[in-house]
Image (cartoon, rainbow, N blue to C red; front, side, top):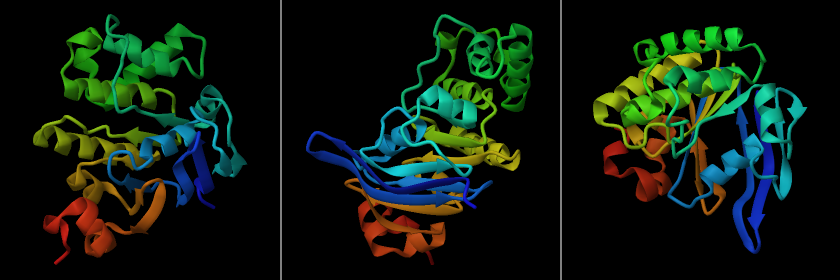
Amino acid sequence: MSLLEVTDLVKSFGGLNAVRNLTIQLAENQILGLIGPNGAGKTTFFNCIAGVYPPTSGNVMFNGREITGQKPWDIARMGVARTFQLVKPFASKTVLYNTMVGALLHTSSMAKARKKALQVLETLSLTDKKDFLAKNLTIADRKQLELARAMATEPRLLLLDEVMAGLRPAEVGHMIATIRAIRDSGVTIFLIEHIMQAVMALSDWIVVINFGEKIAEGTPAQMARDERVIKAYLGDDYVAA
């Protein structure tokens, strides 16, 4: 059984279909990459899964349970966490405080939330910055903090929305290693990313959408050979030998 199953999902805004009959399946402990041009409907699709938007039609199943149209906080308690394209931590609060916010999803105890937050910060190599104010962090560290806050909710499924946007090459490499380690810890990952180096390195399976519709899917090697994907998104550098 798939951990996540989305079937024939449609999301319309007035007369615009942002997502059109999109179906995906994600097995537990895999990494699924979702790619497509800006405006293709990727983040809207994430928002429908996470409960930010109710789908116009279709259904979302998580761990065998229908979550279609449920509230974001209820979906989060079931084990679905996400990051956002625009990182907006509580700027005047510390890294530890921001991470504790995530941990408080499952406890009202500040002591337990602090303990969980410290464990997550150690895992993500942020312990030495736990007392830094979020507004003083570099972009790379803010991205790490966004991950930490999501991981503190103890997810089974992590939705990553362009978590590597704005990072330098060395920072991208570090984030790839971090995401692999998160998956190895037992968390299933669904990621939106424009950095093809990361998508190809991380994904077990890739889905390509355009204008809200799926146009191709397969392994990274298969997508590197797909002419539609090459012409639209990857370029000749990603043609498989």
